[in-house]
Image (cartoon, rainbow, N blue to C red; front, side):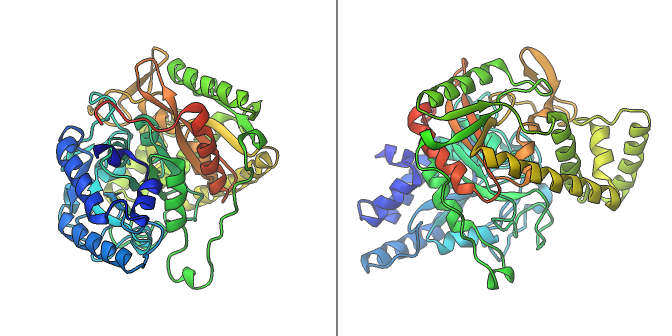
Length: 487
């Protein structure tokens, strides 16, 4: 019965509906698996099984009466520890938040509960969800189920590791710097970054607890073991927070095509401005070859905006978000350092001085960057007039070894045998985030080291069901989720 915990969420929901398994029984299976496997992975860092079992028993009683709470009725799941869950601490890896115990659920969490889900735990994040690895001084290091010497990514690293290892069938994460897509790619699971504005971020930390404004670039979305699960979860959480919910509803358009052979794909797997490691590129090229053989209409090319320009604009707006959280004294010092660096031409993207200059933008400069973004979005609209999906890498590399020394601006990664800036891992996820587009990460194979590689499927704004359904159609051709050795 342990394989039950490796089934996709939509099949588990069907089992619950058909009474082939009870909500209590399914939750107990996950608790047993968590106790056995989580110590080696350290993905789930807090649980509340007493409350979860009580809710599971109520779900079973409702099923017996012929009642359903919604499309996730009785399904156990976990939540990334940057999203508030009432009655559980939301720490986000920060010692200052160890005692932060919210009394309300994040809006997207509440939507999952309203759909019938049973939340039993929280998953690990980096310190304030601000790294491409997952480690922090409160809960320690999360390890990749494929190789414990490798990172599962960040900031939804605990979420992706838990899904991959079968500790949870469904997760809710967040993404601003690839925080859903990169961990999904590193751990061999599915992840979806929704279109901007589709899912409320209220109740997400950071910003500070109690923030009600929607943060720029940040989105909340699901991680799972199948594309069907992504669609199930997304339609549960999509929609505005009050009071906007009074006046409008979300009706996402159906997938653009019905079969793989009907889809038109623009394929962009490498760029001289940010080369992809050959071991990753080889897996992606093999996947595209298989898809072409299955009838996919392929055009090899790139978006109409140079990669360097895309990354510069994305990095500028990303740094501005983090700058808002800098203490006043540090902000003033950062402003001076950033301006001096710019004066001497030492404020390149992916460097600490470059971060400081962009993190302390004037409002005038931010508005100019925002206008450039809006013009860019129009160019992507034109692109998706001729193509249904854009296929591209999630990241330059597969899961790298743990590296907790220094800062993200002093560390390096290895690409094609060369040392490259650690922060360049943000580069390939930037275009979709910058333009507010939906992007689905889907596993397509293993590299020569036996590590997972994911494909990033980008679509037109609010065509989320198109990118997710394309991932579903891909799975029989390129291979979908497979259990890691530790599972």
